[in-house]
Length: 122
Length: 208
Image (tube, rainbow over all chains, first blue to last red; front, side, top):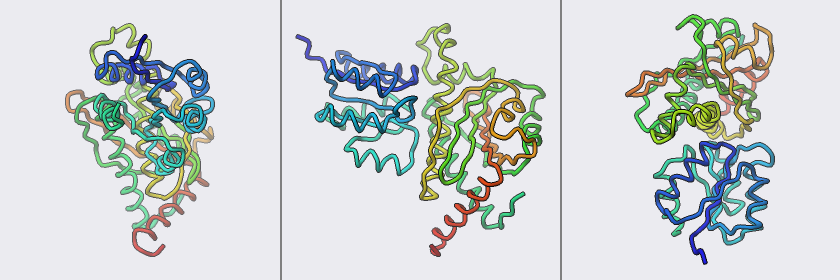
């Protein structure tokens, strides 16, 4: 049985997914990183996987990260969901807080990813 | 065109200065080295003059641009521009040396869009916070062409349309890379921006 933790990375930018993927594995090589390019795809993925952490880009085609977070929060009540965005507006931070999800500023860096994982105690 | 008092003009420069400061910090994290920036200069120009200003450094230089449309507190087209021949270098700095050149080239356009998204949102998001307001951004669009071609692809085709040109030099400590940011606003949007600046001044001067 595989006990490695799963992380779902949701971002329409392939390069951002690639970097998140790489930085997660550089801290926990045994973790499984699953990728989705849209919010809709993320909602499909969580039917079959149980991530401990979902990194969710905000500005994506389709439903967008905030709307996806709203639904993912209900579908995955135990999962840490983090909105990842360069949009530093207070309005987005407030929305994240209302939804009970976290917030991480882009650009994605190894330090930010590692600090996030540590702060969540994962 | 639009009349700003000396105080309003000063506030506008300062607000963009703060926004651009955040953008520089974001850029520095992307390329993993120090990024210094010139003091932003703000000029109101018509579109033809703005294109001429950008194009004056190297005649006919091809530029890659990433644009996002914002609306809310004021409507604007924000455009980040870099010389096209530097874009692969910037992407290489972003993803590191590990990626093979062919794969890097394949994702150059997408990576530049993401870089534009990060830098423009850092700047615009900061402006929205200072204005206690919201600005909603579209997805980034990627363009390649001369500065005139890129500028003419936004909004009104009218050469007389006003462009608020915020011109900044990004200088990477190890790589001489210059970037420019431009905000295109029409007259109605300029009026909205002026109002936001007035509210900001009232707030910071304790008159709100």
